[in-house]
Image (cartoon, rainbow, N blue to C red):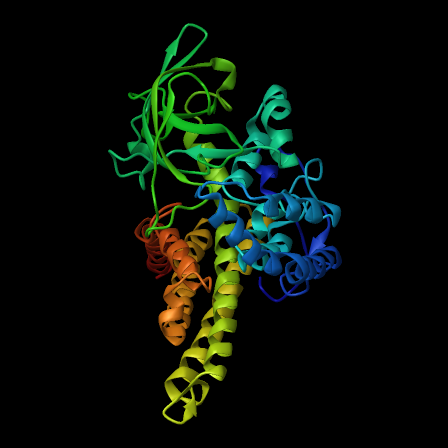
Length: 437
């Protein structure tokens, strides 16, 4: 399966109505010519524009006095990325983006992950907009596409995804309590969400909200998703939630919904489809998150090595210490293993579909943040006091990666998925063996 043989790539949307998205051939170990072209362009964009923009970004944010300020440097980078054709790289549908497969896009997400505050948004490949755009592509009406999808693809607005709730264990999505009650030709929403990433971005205009339309239906048919303009009457941003003390620019909002009325036409796909939409949304999103984590790990390792070479203690460079060399070697091994697992997962998603690759998707979501955290933590240790400051990106990387072990499902939920599938396979093997004796 992983010998590098050629395979036909079908995007996961093939499983949503039989639409063939791409028939070009991609190998697990031989990158396609167009993916290599995007990679070269993106690396140049990072070196010539993104990394030099990082200190400019910090100055503009600091001078604004607003943690949710939208600095001009972001818009400048967006213009340059679009001029270079580095725009909507994530979107697998040729009508809306370059039509790259998961395997082709994964290395590009890694590169953007090296500067997570700037590069993804500069290329219009930032979460949660990427997932929301795919949802609108697959399940939105023509009106939804015109009103919301096209401006999102143009980068003129941003969006948020509201699922997690403060009063229940949202790692089990069947627990959500926000009510979506039918009223006339629409629905009335009442409840509270939190950690709605992006909701405090200056350009956020729309929410995709998951709520409960039928509390007596089967557990996975009780939920639905609906589009809600962020300025709809009854929608109130209660507060921003800092993450390890960081007030991220896009925000993580607690939102109250009080008698919010939305037309039935803004329900996505239909009643009871919320859980299925969520599963379709999360597979590609997890690949993107994990590859960005690898990008952070790679940059942290570069910083670690540079610092180790430039600092001397007790008569020797830090890089000459045996324990530091162990850290460097272990980091390289762990990063390579994690990347390969992610690329295998992307390849499986392209060839057999997201559902069949669920074990691997769960595995990378556990593995990548933990591996990246270990590398970042050791880089912080090498930097000493500097590593705790904002003069280097390591502390911000650590906070982001630690949050990843909870966001999109905590480690324990993904391990549960992996263990359940492994037990099922082992039981089948035992049953087959017993039947053959």
